[in-house]
Image (tube, rainbow, N blue to C red; front, side, top):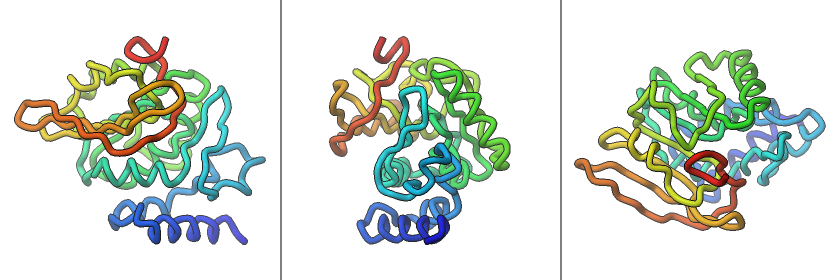
Length: 214
Protein backbone atom coordinates (compact mmCIF):
# COMPACT_ATOMS: atom_id res chain seq x y z
CA UNK A 1 0.00 0.00 0.00
CA UNK A 2 1.32 3.48 -0.88
CA UNK A 3 2.09 6.07 1.78
CA UNK A 4 -0.71 8.21 0.36
CA UNK A 5 -3.17 5.34 0.82
CA UNK A 6 -1.84 4.73 4.33
CA UNK A 7 -2.37 8.39 5.18
CA UNK A 8 -5.97 8.26 3.94
CA UNK A 9 -6.57 5.08 5.94
CA UNK A 10 -5.23 6.84 9.07
CA UNK A 11 -7.51 9.83 8.51
CA UNK A 12 -10.57 7.64 7.93
CA UNK A 13 -9.80 5.68 11.11
CA UNK A 14 -9.54 8.89 13.17
CA UNK A 15 -12.82 10.13 11.69
CA UNK A 16 -14.59 6.84 12.46
CA UNK A 17 -13.34 7.05 16.07
CA UNK A 18 -14.81 10.55 16.36
CA UNK A 19 -11.40 12.10 16.92
CA UNK A 20 -11.39 14.10 13.68
CA UNK A 21 -14.48 16.02 12.63
CA UNK A 22 -13.78 19.70 11.86
CA UNK A 23 -13.41 20.07 8.07
CA UNK A 24 -10.30 22.29 8.23
CA UNK A 25 -8.61 19.85 10.62
CA UNK A 26 -9.50 16.84 8.48
CA UNK A 27 -8.17 18.65 5.42
CA UNK A 28 -4.89 19.40 7.21
CA UNK A 29 -4.45 15.76 8.24
CA UNK A 30 -5.05 14.67 4.66
CA UNK A 31 -2.54 17.17 3.30
CA UNK A 32 0.40 17.00 5.74
CA UNK A 33 2.67 14.04 4.99
CA UNK A 34 3.65 12.60 8.38
CA UNK A 35 6.34 10.39 6.85
CA UNK A 36 8.35 13.48 5.91
CA UNK A 37 8.71 14.34 9.60
CA UNK A 38 10.24 11.06 10.78
CA UNK A 39 13.47 9.18 9.98
CA UNK A 40 13.35 7.44 6.60
CA UNK A 41 13.87 4.00 8.12
CA UNK A 42 10.51 4.41 9.92
CA UNK A 43 8.45 5.41 6.87
CA UNK A 44 6.64 2.05 6.89
CA UNK A 45 5.22 2.99 10.33
CA UNK A 46 4.50 6.63 9.47
CA UNK A 47 0.71 6.28 9.55
CA UNK A 48 0.41 3.77 12.38
CA UNK A 49 -1.33 5.21 15.43
CA UNK A 50 1.56 5.32 17.87
CA UNK A 51 4.48 7.63 18.74
CA UNK A 52 7.76 7.28 16.86
CA UNK A 53 11.30 8.33 17.82
CA UNK A 54 12.72 11.38 16.03
CA UNK A 55 16.12 11.49 17.74
CA UNK A 56 17.56 13.36 20.75
CA UNK A 57 15.33 11.32 23.08
CA UNK A 58 12.15 12.86 21.63
CA UNK A 59 9.07 11.42 19.89
CA UNK A 60 6.53 12.46 17.32
CA UNK A 61 3.12 12.09 19.00
CA UNK A 62 0.66 9.40 17.96
CA UNK A 63 -1.79 10.63 15.29
CA UNK A 64 -4.78 10.23 17.63
CA UNK A 65 -3.19 12.56 20.20
CA UNK A 66 -2.36 15.15 17.54
CA UNK A 67 -5.98 14.92 16.38
CA UNK A 68 -7.42 15.27 19.89
CA UNK A 69 -5.28 18.28 20.79
CA UNK A 70 -5.78 20.01 17.43
CA UNK A 71 -9.56 19.61 17.61
CA UNK A 72 -9.71 20.82 21.23
CA UNK A 73 -7.54 23.83 20.42
CA UNK A 74 -10.12 25.13 17.89
CA UNK A 75 -7.61 27.11 15.83
CA UNK A 76 -9.23 29.71 13.57
CA UNK A 77 -8.08 31.05 10.23
CA UNK A 78 -6.41 34.17 11.63
CA UNK A 79 -5.22 32.68 14.94
CA UNK A 80 -1.83 33.65 16.35
CA UNK A 81 -0.55 30.29 17.66
CA UNK A 82 2.32 29.36 19.98
CA UNK A 83 3.56 25.78 20.05
CA UNK A 84 5.88 24.71 22.86
CA UNK A 85 7.90 21.69 21.72
CA UNK A 86 8.36 21.75 17.96
CA UNK A 87 9.94 18.29 17.80
CA UNK A 88 9.79 17.12 14.20
CA UNK A 89 7.59 19.99 13.04
CA UNK A 90 4.56 17.81 12.19
CA UNK A 91 2.15 19.47 14.63
CA UNK A 92 3.36 22.90 13.49
CA UNK A 93 2.60 21.96 9.88
CA UNK A 94 -0.93 20.85 10.84
CA UNK A 95 -1.51 24.13 12.71
CA UNK A 96 -0.08 26.12 9.80
CA UNK A 97 -2.58 24.60 7.39
CA UNK A 98 -5.47 25.57 9.67
CA UNK A 99 -4.52 29.09 10.79
CA UNK A 100 -3.82 30.26 7.22
CA UNK A 101 -3.34 34.03 7.38
CA UNK A 102 -2.47 33.76 11.05
CA UNK A 103 0.87 32.33 12.13
CA UNK A 104 2.62 29.74 14.25
CA UNK A 105 5.61 30.30 16.52
CA UNK A 106 7.09 26.94 17.53
CA UNK A 107 9.71 26.91 20.29
CA UNK A 108 12.05 23.92 20.61
CA UNK A 109 14.46 23.33 23.52
CA UNK A 110 16.78 20.91 21.65
CA UNK A 111 18.91 22.87 19.15
CA UNK A 112 19.37 19.98 16.70
CA UNK A 113 15.61 19.42 16.49
CA UNK A 114 14.90 23.16 16.13
CA UNK A 115 17.33 23.43 13.23
CA UNK A 116 16.04 20.28 11.54
CA UNK A 117 12.35 21.17 11.93
CA UNK A 118 12.89 24.75 10.81
CA UNK A 119 14.67 23.61 7.65
CA UNK A 120 12.01 20.98 6.94
CA UNK A 121 9.13 23.42 7.31
CA UNK A 122 10.85 26.05 5.16
CA UNK A 123 11.55 23.49 2.43
CA UNK A 124 7.89 22.44 2.47
CA UNK A 125 6.75 26.03 2.04
CA UNK A 126 5.30 26.72 5.50
CA UNK A 127 6.09 30.43 5.43
CA UNK A 128 3.74 31.26 8.32
CA UNK A 129 5.71 29.10 10.78
CA UNK A 130 8.63 30.51 12.78
CA UNK A 131 10.75 27.90 14.58
CA UNK A 132 12.71 29.24 17.56
CA UNK A 133 15.39 27.53 19.62
CA UNK A 134 14.83 28.35 23.27
CA UNK A 135 13.06 27.63 26.54
CA UNK A 136 9.45 27.13 25.57
CA UNK A 137 8.29 27.24 29.19
CA UNK A 138 8.95 30.99 28.99
CA UNK A 139 6.90 31.30 25.81
CA UNK A 140 7.90 33.79 23.13
CA UNK A 141 6.96 37.32 24.29
CA UNK A 142 7.96 38.97 21.01
CA UNK A 143 4.84 37.67 19.24
CA UNK A 144 2.47 37.64 22.24
CA UNK A 145 -0.39 37.63 23.00
CA UNK A 146 -1.43 34.29 21.49
CA UNK A 147 -4.96 33.22 20.59
CA UNK A 148 -3.95 29.59 20.98
CA UNK A 149 -1.08 27.85 22.82
CA UNK A 150 -0.32 24.15 22.54
CA UNK A 151 2.28 22.42 24.69
CA UNK A 152 3.47 19.05 23.40
CA UNK A 153 5.48 17.94 26.43
CA UNK A 154 4.56 17.18 30.04
CA UNK A 155 4.81 19.99 32.59
CA UNK A 156 4.90 19.55 36.38
CA UNK A 157 2.74 22.70 36.59
CA UNK A 158 1.20 25.24 34.23
CA UNK A 159 3.99 27.73 33.35
CA UNK A 160 2.98 31.25 34.42
CA UNK A 161 4.69 32.94 31.43
CA UNK A 162 2.46 30.96 29.06
CA UNK A 163 -0.69 31.99 30.92
CA UNK A 164 0.50 35.62 30.81
CA UNK A 165 0.94 35.41 27.02
CA UNK A 166 -2.57 34.04 26.42
CA UNK A 167 -4.91 36.58 24.80
CA UNK A 168 -8.40 37.46 26.00
CA UNK A 169 -10.64 34.67 24.72
CA UNK A 170 -7.54 32.56 24.14
CA UNK A 171 -7.07 28.86 24.83
CA UNK A 172 -4.10 26.70 25.84
CA UNK A 173 -3.75 22.91 25.93
CA UNK A 174 -1.03 21.43 28.10
CA UNK A 175 -0.27 17.99 29.66
CA UNK A 176 0.25 18.50 33.41
CA UNK A 177 1.34 15.94 35.98
CA UNK A 178 4.21 13.61 36.81
CA UNK A 179 6.84 12.08 34.57
CA UNK A 180 4.87 8.89 33.98
CA UNK A 181 1.31 10.09 33.37
CA UNK A 182 -0.38 13.46 32.97
CA UNK A 183 -3.76 15.10 32.51
CA UNK A 184 -4.49 17.11 29.40
CA UNK A 185 -5.56 20.51 30.73
CA UNK A 186 -7.37 23.27 28.84
CA UNK A 187 -6.62 26.79 30.09
CA UNK A 188 -8.76 29.72 28.92
CA UNK A 189 -8.79 33.45 29.56
CA UNK A 190 -12.41 34.64 29.70
CA UNK A 191 -13.27 38.18 30.81
CA UNK A 192 -9.81 38.43 32.34
CA UNK A 193 -10.28 35.28 34.43
CA UNK A 194 -8.19 32.11 34.01
CA UNK A 195 -10.30 28.97 33.77
CA UNK A 196 -9.04 25.38 33.78
CA UNK A 197 -10.71 22.23 32.47
CA UNK A 198 -9.34 18.67 32.65
CA UNK A 199 -9.87 16.45 29.60
CA UNK A 200 -8.09 13.08 29.75
CA UNK A 201 -5.06 11.16 30.91
CA UNK A 202 -2.09 11.20 28.55
CA UNK A 203 1.63 10.42 28.39
CA UNK A 204 4.21 12.86 27.01
CA UNK A 205 7.97 13.32 27.31
CA UNK A 206 8.97 15.81 30.06
CA UNK A 207 8.85 19.55 29.35
CA UNK A 208 12.33 20.83 30.17
CA UNK A 209 13.02 24.43 31.10
CA UNK A 210 12.88 27.08 33.80
CA UNK A 211 9.13 26.54 34.37
CA UNK A 212 9.25 22.82 33.60
CA UNK A 213 11.37 19.88 34.66
CA UNK A 214 14.97 20.76 35.46
